[in-house]
Image 1 (cartoon, rainbow, N blue to C red):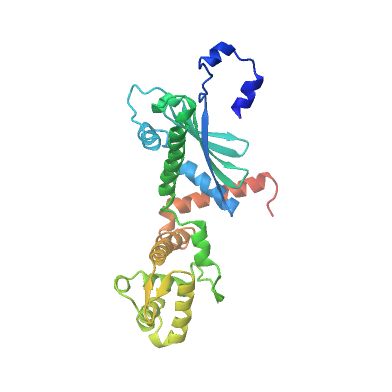
Image 2: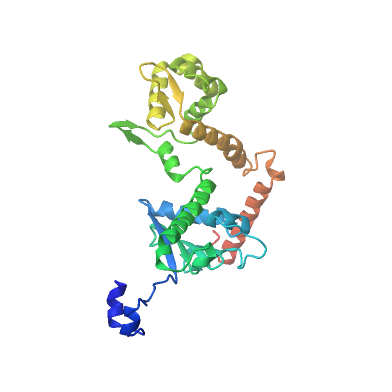
Length: 315
């Protein structure tokens, strides 16, 4: 491709020079290596990128840049080490720098996460400028993209994703079998999840009767009130939602890795956040007057009433 243009552009070397072996050598002025990850659910991808920005504002620090670019950084290393978030309109982008190299990350066309590493000086990585160095430079660029994505993935692994929440809280159809949603907050569902968290069920498999006694006790019912048929229905529902699995050729079950995390998370959020938090919003709770949450809500109510009165919207 380049040779075609060499044939058209003025050549500084004479015919004798060219016969003597003098030629132009191609060099690398700038190289860009990009990775584009397209989401089948663009809105979820946008939410993910916004969380990535919030959770990774320290990526520009020297210790993080050193890991991402796999280069040793000292006090004499030139450049400013910082993370920049630049917003154009409503589209934010994340920027990380190392000497003359830069990483830019943004959500492209509202459906793809774009990660770009641009190298403006190959000698920042102890590589020459001649074109035969491009494979080595390519390996550095794509490895840098991979490392920054790995760092961001680790920061997001601890969060319960929207897809997992939908898997648990929406009806599912698995191999033609339909399962209703075990809705978060439902008394029977929360008793099931809490029972699955019990230590006695985790080391070994459990049966219908074993789990049924625990669920009935948590719901405050007699075991005969929560019969085997209802338990069988709930076991099927939990299995099709991926929270438990049946041991082949037996009538025993075990909780899955997903089930352990979801059950523990849901039960703790319900018991330690939702129920006490909601109770503090109402005057009937003895703890409400002394809690910051209740005071903040009351202040919000007063401000809204004042705003409506000033706008003459009051009844």
